[in-house]
Length: 153
Image 1 (spheres, rainbow, N blue to C red):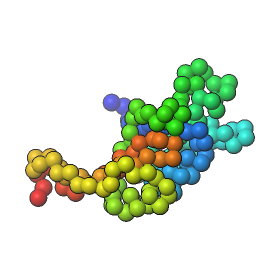
Image 2: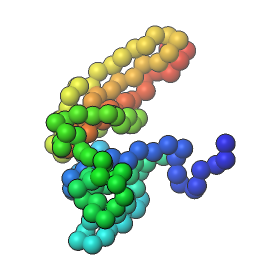
Image 3: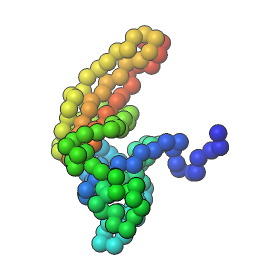
Image 4: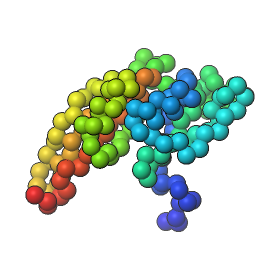
């Protein structure tokens, strides 16, 4: 494979919000993302954004209703909030301290749908501590902390 452009991971995700500017602020406060790029258009509309978490990156944009004059496929971009809470993806991030991260997310208003718990997949695999949270527009997130790698005691 050819290398990716500098600063870009091999894969990243785009997620859509009714109010992407507010979502960007919330994702920083609750989950610890950093804004690498935010392109604002007319009326403060988010044209493009890049948020990083370690070496990972997501792009946050507006739902189809906020894409006037854009291509037809963009009209299908939506938020779980607008489709009865349905999700077709969950974003997963590794953090250094799951319990502290969960407390930060709760304080910022995240709904924790799975409290931090530890899962041991066995000696040949790994042990992780994780929790699940839902953001204000219904996107599902999973945060994990590796406690033990394969073959470690």
